[in-house]
Length: 333
Image (cartoon, rainbow, N blue to C red; front, side, top):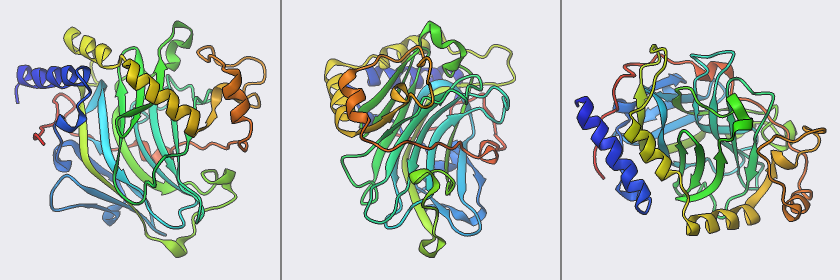
């Protein structure tokens, strides 16, 4: 596929996003065309349809995959089904990172799914890092309005020059706006897309109180209907960039409509259980500059227990990539 054709596909995608965010019309990508196994040997299984992937965690290892290309902004999505029953200590991550290219000053945009003991629900955590600012966590945590183990649900990340938006089933749940005061803390360097399952016993459930119990293994999570669209760049270029039209299309796509904003506010009021902006234990003197405090929200979040965090293991950010100079081929739904 030539550059002009790839660019027109990219541009039409984000034009579609602006006009109603019709996710069901976006092109899907076959696993072998867009991704490479990262680790896990036989714990990664690609289904016969070529678009569905199963990741497994057992006593030996977890598993994961990584995009072939590296992107400077874009839209990244998958339908995911999480393991049922006892899942304490299990972490499933769907995220963008460049830790393999910039070990000391990497960027990251995370969806992390945190398992729980039997009878308690999975939780979602979102976070961003920029330029190695891992000491300044911008985590938020949420419950869901459905059981993510019963069927597939869609989780998406929109990353533009000025915004990062996290979506669940096409509902925006978090918007991060780039501000001048954030400086390099806003992710701005090209990143790959990753998906992994691993043992986070030390922190993921009640601060490490409950770890992975391999009596209930294997833990299996499934990904399908993968959407991998963005501005693919060559990381060896000194100043990789996107075409002006693509940048503008992403900017327009990141403008949340009034109805979407109402959905997001409703979700956050009902389901958010933690926000770094109200964590006075971590930020005792000055909160991060982009935080706008809401007294009612602060009061509501005080009822939840203190939160413990852990990072994605360093070894999960390394993978051998194929060509980064092309967009992966796609097929229409």
